[in-house]
Image 1 (cartoon, rainbow, N blue to C red):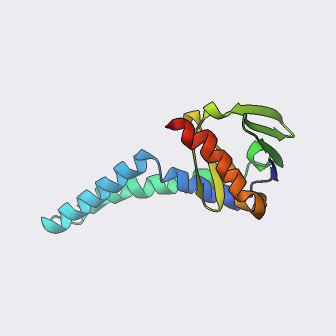
Image 2 (cartoon, rainbow, N blue to C red):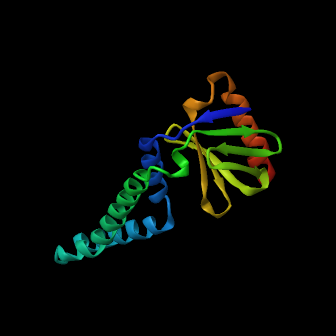
Length: 156
C-alpha cells in the first residue's frame, strides 16, 4: 500500500507536545507538584511550597512547547517534505526528496493512533507520523491490519 503525504506544521507541533508530556520526566514533575500541593494544603504550610513543585513542571511544559515551535520553523526539516510510504509485509519504504529508506518491521516497537495520525514508533523512540487523512478511508482497515500483523502480533 502506497501512502503519499506531507506532515503539516500544526500536526507536528501537536504531536511533539503530546509526546513531550508522555515522557517519564513529565510524570516525575507532575507527581512532585501534586505531592507538594497536597502537603502544603494538608499541613498548613506556606504557599511558597507550591512553587517548589509547580515551577519545575511549568518550566518543563514551557520548554516542550518552545522546542516544538522552534522545530516546526525549520524550513528544510525532512518531516515537512512530501513523503511516500510504501507499506508492505516486508516493512516500510520511505521516499522523499532527501532519499529513500527501507525499514523492516523488526525496527518498529509499536504503533498507535493519536492526534488524527498513525504514529509508528521505531527503536530508540523515533517515530513515523502518517496523517490519517492521507490514508484513503477504504484502505484504513487494511493499513491497520498490516500494522497489527507485523508489529502487534510479532511482539507476542
